Length: 340
Image 1 (tube, rainbow, N blue to C red):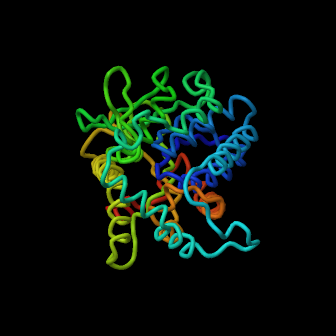
Image 2: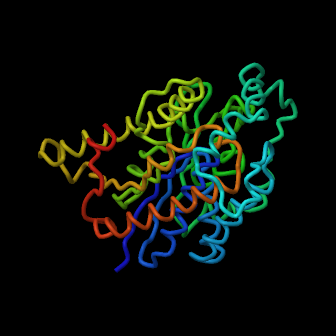
């Protein structure tokens, strides 16, 4: 029997390889169908590859295109390369993270982006992702029917509010806007409006699924750890945790609102026929994601990408074995415990 679910894909730079792994495993489930996908930044790129691949070659086509995309991300990456690529057995994630955090190239880049704006450092506004997206994404398929509806989240610089691109609005610029970190790239202007990374106000936004999809099940694929043990003490640790908290804040607020409405429905306070009770599911591995720091988000390294892809696959596999039967019936997470 076919089960339908919606996807919510977080952003997080190169850590989006975790989502690649999760999608790679989910696509192997022949009885799982996807009505809609809401996504931000790297999640938006994963969504575009998945939908394009599904249209061109079915499930295997989606798996192949996602793999090709991430291999090309590594091939075309600028910045320091890990010296560990020559070894058959890569080092543990903590060593990889430490290498990048304290590499002279990363430290110099971090200083430059804190001192000068992208309008000074990159006056020609060169973004290597533009050519890759234009090369690989079929926007007619992403914007059209009958594939999953796609919602791309960005932040309006002028208004400080979320902007959701969907249908014909989804272009290369919309995806680049969703992934526009303001200390690395100039704001992406669309119809005269400047946009930054969607992670600041919707990582990802859940409300497009509530209002625009019939399916009530939403599966969130997390990139940014919600919980992290210990108190950050070094400058790098503090910066990293601030990044994680900031990029989870909007999702946490939406989860609080969903939990509130669900309790009102369950208690009979509001009419269940007029309000939609969402069923929330979650693919999340805070322990693994916490071993990688913010430096590895912006320096794609095959060892990091491979480790995250494998973690995403195994986490999705574990979720399917434990919770797939709950799709269409009940939540597989306790919102209050896991988010609030």
